[in-house]
Every structure is written in structure tokens, then in C-alpha cells.
Length: 288
Image 1 (cartoon, rainbow, N blue to C red):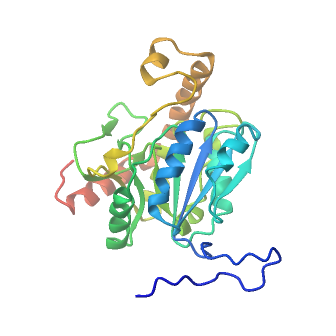
Image 2: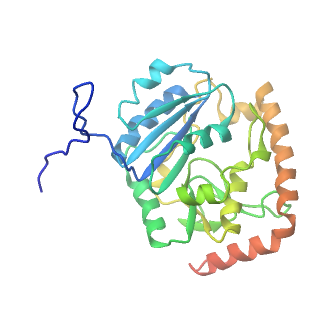
């Protein structure tokens, strides 16, 4: 097989022939930047192992802060950055999705999640999607069923894969056409500048109720993702819990409200949701 590259343009005004641009990338990765610039840059560098079938879009939600630093890592022609001012995660993800050139998938990633330095996790996800056209969404961190109910079930490492009705961001991968079909992220889980905990659970549930499956995937390769590797503000999960900041207190209040919103939104679908998840898992030999 020839290694000769095909020019992507013929008459560039700059005089530079482009070889690397991908007119039809398979996947878009949207990263929302607000806190952890150094971790995000490390993740971008590691995502290069996926090749140019994946484009990277950064939503800079700090009104352009660290733009020069970020742009030094966004060196591929498919890379883009959006400038916003504290609109918060859900809107940042959606803005990225709206300008995606991807043919098949969108991945939503937080800026303090560190990607593995290989493509194995991505190939694991693609394999699941390609094996099942009814698989709509994959989460790589945690998920479960009975969200916002007394009997809430949270799954992390009990299975390599399991079907769920809710997922937590970190990261999430969804079929692009399905993302828009279900109405994208729901608006009611945050106003601008607010935390949107629960919106990730909601979008996984919407996938389920539209006749598709939501899966938690925890293969050895997927587990190489490092959640909250370094936030950039010196805070860790433990320190936040012990000494919550003002921002964390407001976040917790919004999460409590969002639990109520989710409960009221789906309270008439509890049995349908649970039975659907039960059926999906029974098909792969998991009894819930």
C-alpha cells in the first residue's frame, strides 16, 4: 500500500497544499474548559493517538482565558475552539455538537478527565456500537438505574459492560444523529453559569425511552481514563467534600433541585424504564 498522501485542496489562496484535513471525521470530541487547562492539554495530546478520524472542539467557557496556551495544542486543521463566558457545561457541550463535522459520534469530555495515552478505549467503544445498531450511548465512568429514587443503584466496576438508565459524565459517547433526534441536552437542568448535575442522567434516560440502549462500559482500557486528574485549582474530590467552597455549595443546591426535576419528569415511566433495562441486561446474561 502506498504511503503517498492525497492533497485535500487544489487552489489554496495561501499557497499551502493541505494533506491532513478530514472533511468527514467519524467522531467529534467536545471538551468544556472552565477549570483544568493543564489536564485538558494533556488529554488533547493523548487524543492524537486516535488519528484524524476524530476532531477536537474545545468550548473555552472562561471568555478566552488561556487561549494562547490552548491553541498551541490545537494544531490540527480540524481542531476548533469556541469562546463563551460561564455558560456552563451543558451549553458548552451543545455548542460544540452544533458545529460538529462528524459522521457518526460525539464524545462529551470534562476538562479535568485525563485520557489514556492509547486508542484502545476508543476501539472498545466503536466495537460495541458497530455490533449493535440499537446501542445509542456509552458512558465510561459510572451509571445505574432508579436515579433520584430511594432504591437508586450505582454501578462502577462490577461489570465490563452493563445496560443502564442513567450515566454520569466522564466521558459520554453518543450517536450523533440520535443526539439531535432526542433533543440534545435538556434545558431544565441548569441556567447559565450553573452546575447541571443530573443532565447526564437525563440524556441517558431519553436515549432509552427513544428505543435505544444506554451502556456503561468499563473494560480494562476504559478504566485507564483518570477522573479528576488535576483540576488546576488545587482542589480534589476529598478536599471539596471536607471543605466545600461557595461554588460547591451552590452546585450541591442545584443537584438537589435537579434530582427533583428528574423525579417529576420520569415518575410515570419508572416501571417502563426499569423493565427495559432489565430486559437489555437479560439479553447479555445479567440479572438485575
